[in-house]
Image (cartoon, rainbow, N blue to C red):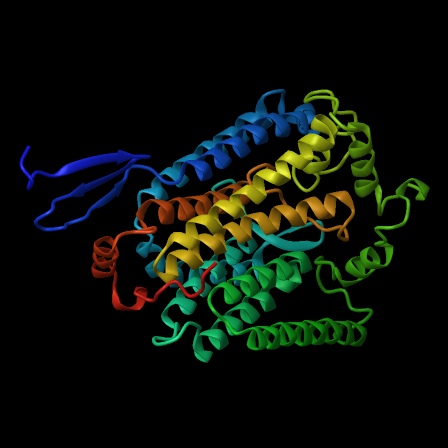
Length: 435
């Protein structure tokens, strides 16, 4: 064999061709990260089993197979989205950030005035028979936008982000939070948490980061008291059927006490969801009663969405609930491992932002269901019933897989040079921090 002959090495789906004369390197991955794919598939399988177990209320009206067939159709669409986005180079998301955010913002404004009124609040609208919740789109739009802004605002000579990037990112979050707050405090807090984490990963100095958090807190408190004052001035007027949810939030906060024994409380119209949820978890014990044997699914409202984690614990016990939480945390750890190996800033912010969004929402759902947080509606990503939630979570997984497939990770000098050559000027910033 000639010394000039290329040698090919196959390792985990990555083919590296090395010619000693040209020292050319080419990296081709057929698929995204296997661990992320495995977590996605595992969550889909758990979702099918547990949603069927939690749908006894719907079975009575829609037939025994109706609810699960609709859910499986949505999951199949989610798989298609993930597979399609995996094939896209991560740089395409940079250009789509503004378009996606604009569409999300317009949908939110539309819902504020013309959305469907459900449980006294405008949160969605119906299109082609499908209920769309723009709040979910707004959260992922924030990830796209902050990743873009923080990338082109990276300092050139030293690690860190320029002040303009931090200011623009904070203004975007405040704008999104202002239109999201009337629909739900939990989603607003989630948005703030996701953005704060991404700003820190993007290289923001700790003192500046703390200042941003203080501004968030002050403006949030101002909005709360301003709304309270406005409500007192228009007391007695009732011009539409949309309910002001401020009193509901205040009542939930007053009733919230994670240290009080729940079995001492009487069940009433205000607390029956959480009380039946606690009963389901207590009934699950250590190993659970196994899927299909849930006792509380027939009387727990929204067992298939906002309280599905309670049914999972009843079916699979404490062990099953812990393993599911660990599955989401493994997603965050795997995203962190990929981000550490990337050389450019945008894939780092994109993969970490998407993972934080999914995992933080899952932890919020679990904390609310178990009583660690005050009661609020929050779906469990990929598990709860809901077309919009599945769609957005699938986009997040697709973006993470796109980064794992197309970003150079721990590459040679030649591979790094080739990646840099492919990227536009605004995407060439280095990995902002050593994660």
